[in-house]
Image (cartoon, rainbow, N blue to C red):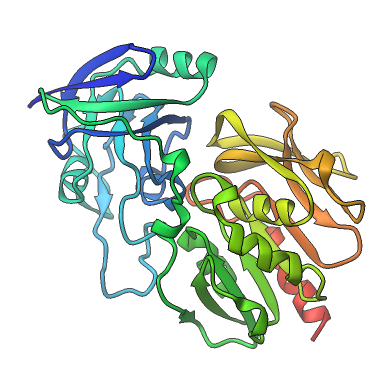
Length: 356
C-alpha cells in the first residue's frame, strides 16, 4: 500500500494509493466517462501513451477475464496487452465477483507493469481537464521520479501496428485491413460475414494486392504521423474498391481527401456520444475514443459529411458522393458500449457484394 501522486503539468497534485505496478510513469492525461468495459478500454491501442482517468467511481468490482494466449483473437479484450500508461480511479473494489473473472484488476495491472492509483477525486480532476484541455502528467510512486513524456510527438501507430501479415477466416470476400492499432472487435465484426480478413502493418503498400474491400482501423496519436498510409489511400480512393475507415482511419481518409486534422480540447472518450446522420433525422448513441478530428471544410468537392457530433458539432464521419467509400470517427463495433451503428458493417459488406 504505497503512496502515489498524480502531478499535472500545471502544477496540480492529487495523492492517493497505488494498486497496480509500483513504478512511476509519464504520459498524456485523458478521461473516459464509460460506466463499464474497463478490460476492453485498457487494451484499446488508441490509448497508447496515455494516463487514463475513469470517471465512473467504482472500478474493479467484476474483475478481469483470463486471457487465453492460444486464441488468435482473445475473446474478451481489444488486443493482446494493456496499452494505457497508467490508470487513475476514485474507488477500487478489492473484492470482485463475476462468472467470467479470472483475476483482479490490480493483479492484471501489476502483471502488465502498469501503475494505477485509487483514492483520487476524479470529479475534480475531470473538471480541470474539461476546462484546460488534455495535459501531460506523471504518476509518482513514493519518491521515484520520472521525466515528462509527450506522446503526441511520437509515432504511436508504429508501436501498436502488427509487425507481419496475418490472415483470419476463409470466406468469399477478401478484406485488406490496414492495422493502425486495431480493436479486435473490428475483426470479429468483419468475420461475422463471409469474409477473409488480411491484417497488414499501417505502412504496408497494399495497392498491388488483390482485395475486395479495404478497411482502415482506429489507432493512437496524431494522424499526421501516418504519412505512408495517407499516400496509399490517395491512390486507393481513385480506384472503385469499397473502403471503410474507423476513428483514426476516418482521419486518414479525410486527410487523403484534402481535409486537415486538428487536436480536440479533451477528445471524445465515452460510450454515450450522440451523432446525427446527415440527410436524416436519425441520432445514434456511439462509443468513441479519439483525440483528433478532421476539418471537413477542406474536403474535396466529391466528398460530404456523413455524421456530426451533437455535443460539439465536430465531423464524425465522411463519405464519397459517388464511390462506395465511407468513414466514421466513432466505433460501430463498440466493445464495450452501444452497438446502434453496427449496421455500417453490413452496408460495407453489401457494397462489396454489389461489385462481385
